[in-house]
Image (cartoon, rainbow, N blue to C red):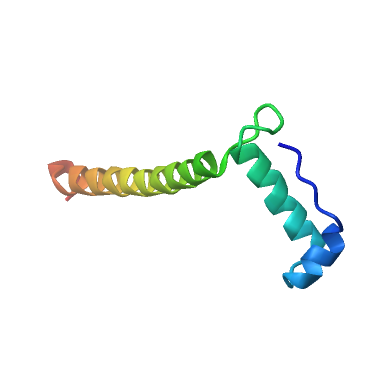
Length: 82
């Protein structure tokens, strides 16, 4: 969908936004409506990606913690280390 905005600078001023922010929002709205460049992520896809990245960070921290705990307890149970 092609959006017709008379004067984007005026609209941005009226909304107390920068032109860049307003253009970005319009571009994202177009993508969300299916009228965007190939490979562009919709808002829903962007949010899902953020959620998955956050979850991945958490899982990596948990994995690293468990590795350290396993190494600690393996060393603690080794009679030759005393």
